[in-house]
Image (cartoon, rainbow, N blue to C red; front, side, top):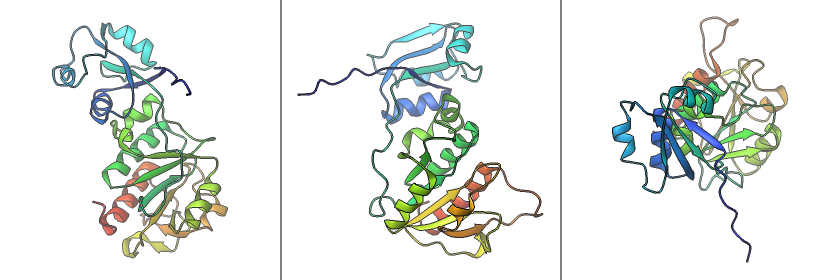
Length: 245
């Protein structure tokens, strides 16, 4: 019988809401919690969620700054094990609404998109392994910890992901400036995949050809929404039509 490997608590999640969601979700193994010696306002409520076997260290703000590598920790952080990525691609029978992120670069955009994905009823998110932002502590912080509740799959490439999803029967919708179908009067079909492009170049032409191009109307053609804002509007529109929210 293969011996179970011990959990390595080499990852960090920081911020009040992320740590709260971490404790409530029970999805990641927690090795320890660091918080300020002078208690933060939220500690009274948070401390009630901490299992007795998890050690809590009271430290200085300087220590938290150094461990987190950021001053954005809000006075609390947790050492955790690896995020449990989905081992297989999503399927229409269990996951009706999927979001695919095509090389999103900014971790805060990534976190904001994951936050909106959870709020709008997305069943799963596909990220690519290279040339894209990863699930860093800052990404979890920007998601307000809601990324912890989402099934997330790491695909080898965006094309491979779209091909596999399309083959499974998903309707592919690509958010592009060159689209002719306005989200304002478009009817989305389930099961649905929404593809959100890179902040600078958007969705590649090869990928856009694999689905229906959806246009998000805006005031002028020479401007564009922030990637996370556009994603939020589109996910809300699709989630509402598919009765996910």
